Structure formats: C-alpha cells, structure tokens
Length: 476
Image (cartoon, rainbow, N blue to C red; front, side, top):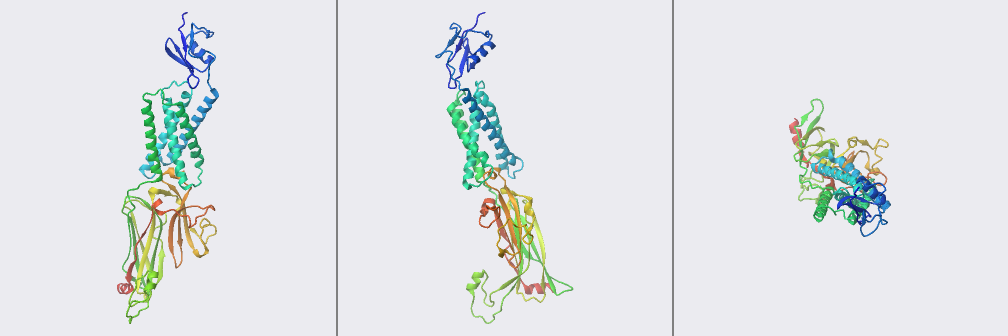
C-alpha cells in the first residue's frame, strides 16, 4: 500500500507541531503518541515507523523534540476559564437585579447589557479549551479576547467606583479578585497574540478595544452619575376655609386645607411632612413714635412693627400632612383637610398656618415597606437604631433600607437608609435624611448624605395668615 509523505512542522510557541499529508494540514500533535493517533485516523498502520526518512520528514528538529508544557498549559486554561465563568456569573447576578425591576429605562438597558456581556464571557469560557488546545476553531482567540476585555473594563471600573467612598460591602470579595484576574488574563491573551489567524487582526483588535472603552465609559457614567433632565415639580399650598361657630360651645372651628400635587414627570416618595397652625399675640403700643426692637425681630426672623411689641406664637394644632412612604406619580395629588378649634374669646391677633414636605425621587432608589411603620421613643427598644440625646424628648422614628435604582451602585456602596424623625411637643417638627449606619449599627446626625445625591428636596407651603378679627366676623 502506498502511503503519502508525512511532514511534521517545527514546534510553535506552545510546543504544538503541525502535521501535513501531501501538502494538506491534517492536524497537530503534542507528542509522538499524538502523532500516531492522527496518522492511524488517516489510514496508516498503528506500528508505522516514524523514523523512516522516506515516509516522515521532520522540519528543523527531529522526533525527540516535543516542548509541550502540558501542566502549565492546562493550568493557564483552567484559571482563564474559571475567571470567565466567575465574571459571567457576577455580571448576570448584578444585571439580573435591575433587568426587570429597575424604575428607569436607562438602568434596565444597562442591566441587559451586563447580562449579554456575561453571556459572551460564557462563550469565551467554552472557547478556552480549543484555544489552549489545538485551535481548530478560527475565532476562539477572538472570543477570549472580547471576554477578558469585558472583565477588565467592568471590574476595574467597579474597583474605581468603590475607591470613591471605600466602604465595606461583601461584593468587594467578588469584583476585586476578578479585577486582578482580568489584568492577568488580558496580559496572557496579549502575550499569546490571540488575534493571530483572524482576518484583518489589527482592525479587529482596534474594534474590540474601542468597543470596550466606549462600553466602559458608558458603564462608569451610568453608575457614577445619572443625569436626570426632568426635575421634581410639585405644587404645595395651604389655605384657610370658612370658620364656623360651634352651636353648643363657645368654640370656632377653623378649617385648613393642604394640597400637594405632582405636576412634573418624575415620581417621588414623601418621606416627611408636618404642619402647624398657630395663634399670634403681641403687646399693643399705640403711642410708639418709631420702630423699636428691630435687632430682636431680626434674630427671631419676624417683621418689625411700629405699634406692636415682639410677637409670640402658640401652636394650636400640628400633625402630618401625608403619611411617610406615600408616593405620587406624575399627575397625582392629595388634598388634606384639618379643622382647628379656637376659643371664641381667645386674645389672638391672627392665625397662621405653615407646613413642609420632604420628598425623595423614586428614580434614585426604592425605600422598603419598613419605612412606613412608625417606631415610638416611649416604647422600649423601638428606637435603638437612632442616636438621639435626652433633649430630643418624645419622638416618632421611621427607618427603611434604600435600594439604589442602579445595582452597580448597590455593589460599590454599603447600605443606605432613609430615616425620618418627628419631634413632638411645643417644638414639633419632622426631619428626613438619607444616611448609612455607623460602626455601632445606628443612625446618627453626623454622617448624612448630600440631598442632591438622592434627589431629596424639602418644599414649604409658606406662611398663610388670617386676622383673628376676620375669623370672629366670619364665624358670627
């Protein structure tokens, strides 16, 4: 039987020797045993004499040169595949959180892109065996090149974002090791020149790099700064209604109406609201010739009057306008009516109503349902999470975990909480902020987040005043 001439090429950089039969490439061999398997598949006898110079031609080096470093090659392939699978799992977990539940379209698009990037990395992991094997698939190197560049851009960006605050989060045990691995992986793939064998390799490599940089820039931009062109817009006002005299008691019922409407295009949560209705008194000085007490008026933030001394106010009624945690979508609103009882013989000069609401943009994050449950300072253990000195007096406390609408921020920051405190008594008021917990697992007033980070805004009704004489006249 006539056998075709066998040509065994010199070893390549990995120790693999290409095998030709009659000028046609039929495979590649790592060893003599590997070479025999190839030849048997092509019809050669199992005991073919590989030292027969008439049958086998050895290029540059002979049959005793097989520089394959099997263990090193397999370890490299295993570490490469493991890192790609781990990175793909990480991207799918992070992206999966926002893909269907994010409140903004931009966050959902980012999440879907993360999932798709993870899927590309899974394909790259499958290509590792071929690329660190006999490279029978032309584009296995390109897949790995794309996969490791994705890992480099994503995980290094996450590390950079984490360094902005340097807060502990369990997620750092995921992306920090992967960032180190991605640097090694890119160096390894570059050393292997994975683009060789690809048509127009320089263009492909440039395209991969440009795409990775563009995606990374967009990724970092969406994570570090979310540009919301539409601003929170609302109307919030208060007004007195028609007073009514009680038919049985010498009491005047004074109605007050509060109205809050979302007139913009951004949904928001109300995280604090409070109102006060107060009565004003001051000493009449009919013989005054000039303004006095101006300094005291300025310090107290009141107007200066010629015929009246320093005014004093007493709170007649206070309460919530909207329950903490309620949300308002664009075009929705709420009207709240309050009736204040004032003695008919009261010596007030005027009645005044004030109020304010504090809102949190819904597209910056979600507040969990626990925020809607009040906790009372006079119930033991309910307000242990807040650092409040004894002079706080009695208060009501609200707290709920804030989940950022972009899960990229969730994995680079420790948890934030929306907290609100309603102070009771003569100095009643209500405050709300976003804050992380301190080292003791409590909320303090020294570590608050800037309001603009989460779109927190406080809106006032302004002070609405009605003369008490008008109240008496209208009621009678």
